[in-house]
Image (cartoon, rainbow, N blue to C red; front, side, top):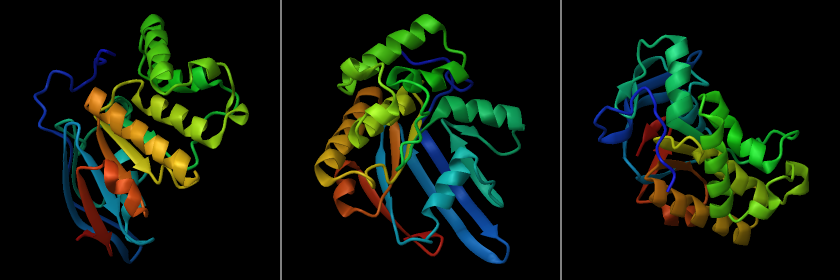
Length: 232
């Protein structure tokens, strides 16, 4: 088992991995998020579905800090992000969130091992601990034999498995997965979903899965629909 890293909120008593309270976001005169409320328990897996333009990606962007919300509150691991300095926001998000993208977003000049290790370097994890975690995760995703291959030498399914391991290396409270099987065929996509479910259970990491695919929701405890900037 990989031990949990130290983080700014490690000592706090946590009930939820993520709390979203009345979050609003507009672009110009267009309201994109209109009072979103959502809570994810520790280790809970929630699927977020809805048509394009319903606000799903904007919500993820507000959680991870790509977009700033207009008003409302977001808590990660029981810690409110409101009124934090940019430096503290960056630190807590680096510790608390792992992100899995549809298009993998692996660094092309780094090997599979180095891509997985990179987020742990950003949170100043000691080198020996980083390497031990990378080895365990490579084994967990079945890619120990591909550790030194760069992304262009890996299949799409292998790249996505590396991306999942990268999201977990620092044991965040929460993984945000934005259409993680969208560029994979159904068989490989199913394997990736199984891996996400297994690792979420093993490490008690909450998962917020944005998907258009009803089949992908099978790994989740709850399915929530989004329409016109609101959860339905």
